[in-house]
Amino acid sequence: MKVKLLVILISVLFISCQNDDEQNDTEQNNDVQTEAIEGSWNLKHVYGGFSPVNIDYTFGDVKWTFNESNRNVVIENNVLTTGPEDIHAGLDSGIYSFEIQLENDLQTLYIDSVEIGTILISGDNLDIDNGLALDGFVNKGK
Image (cartoon, rainbow, N blue to C red; front, side):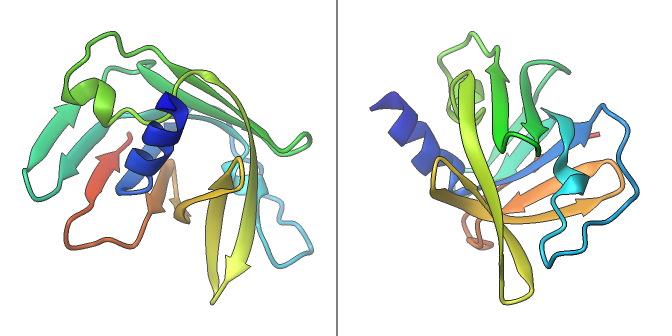
């Protein structure tokens, strides 16, 4: 139940993380470029929403490690508080399946078959946008 609640909460978030692994510059020959997501990403900052939040995370509090070869993401959620920091940190620690689908020229991330949002990788930032620009949240990584 808590996992479902966290999946729902994360679906109303924009997520940006920092990649702490080197990125592979080669591109795949298919429509979806998933190699760029390969590696580890750390949640840095969350802000936004109707009741504005502005939360900084310490490097290592929330880490997502994507493995393209087995299509799994390992999530390490080390947030110990029960307040907003925990609510906006996303999924619990665990191993989840993931896929990226091309939809209307946008890459959409699914975790355990649940749509999380469209992704954009720019440099060392990963943005996951659920499309709720007016009332969503923005999580920044650096």
